[in-house]
Length: 462
Image 1 (cartoon, one colour):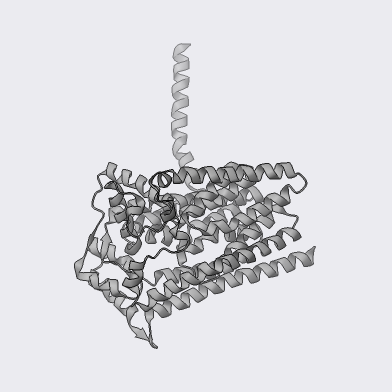
Image 2: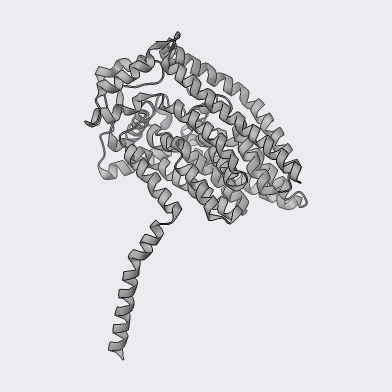
């Protein structure tokens, strides 16, 4: 009997072992998995070699200061809250574990590019550093895509729509560029922002508040969605004030506790005020003096000042629109996602830097996948404009040219010089940037026009 049982067990193991390759093949044929693999493959190819060194080289400098024992706000020009610094600290540990110590080099022969119109540096980061420092943003790309997939699936029960939503995000050229070329952390704050919405719908109010606090402490834009989340809770619990009060207080507690945890080091070393400079200005007096002769930089600084002044007006407009949306709609989920989409569109209608546009994309994608596929048109216009704005910068090829034989530095410099040449009295760089930003703004206007049309159609069919 024992021998028989052993033979049966061996046969069972053999059959199961034979089934493993079939299950793997079946898994790899799932559409969302195929999209994930394609998106990751694209990112892994471009992460090491394509890089916006103006920002990425500064991440290298921050990590070197951290490793030398300096505080975040002892570093000249660190105009962010501590969260991104903590993430860079974690990445520095991984780099040390892998033996990565060569982060980049200053190429004296191309220092003249730092005087070009735009933001350029002759310090070029290495492919290994480029790859490592972008990993957190790529992970965030995946998690945002997963949450979009889950939200669409839960609200529609349709895997095709959920996969469509995942694809719009994960294969979006702007999303790929921001995390895997530019090397900025916008995908990370978007991840926490979307998590706050997902958690609130699930009733996890503490997590929702904590997540939104982290998002706001990375970039200020997620603060605007707070109005939509509060309106959602008020409408949902308008007949039960106790539940409403409890949920809001729980979310506030989560946000407060998370903020306190994040700021403990700054409280202890007395640099809280320095960490809040991102709310008003990320350019200090020395930067202003360095770039004051550059028309483009002066225009950028002027634009930032105007946008800061516009924030209260945009907040009032967002609140008015949210009030209107929730007042007329009995579908709470639709009112929530409409409010999130419209709010983020309103606050980004100015010529925003392309990476900021990521703030609006998850909610626009969710609305397009769940309620009206026609909204993919403004999505495409917005992303085309933002991507063209981003690609108006051949300097992303400099690391590729410096550390491989694929391209020469001279070729990249020639491309950069072409963009600097005047056309109709303005540089080509400025003209392309202006046109691309106008297209981006038209996309947001289209979004609002599509929303107005959608509301009229819903009303006429009611």
